[in-house]
Image (cartoon, rainbow, N blue to C red):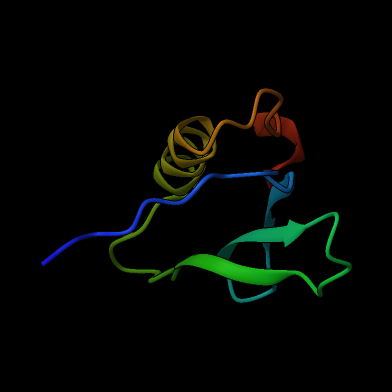
Length: 80
């Protein structure tokens, strides 16, 4: 069995950001900029009042955004 090789011609840039809804769920969203596609939710972190703290959610979100290559992230003051 032979595996065909391919050449990557262009990598389309992605816009990545985080939003938090009224119920406390964090949505890490992505949008492929060159393709004109709609943004989509890549990761969701649900909030449970008994077990989840805002600080824990904020720290996890910052780490995930950093892993995805986002250089500027939200400040804790923006996280409501």
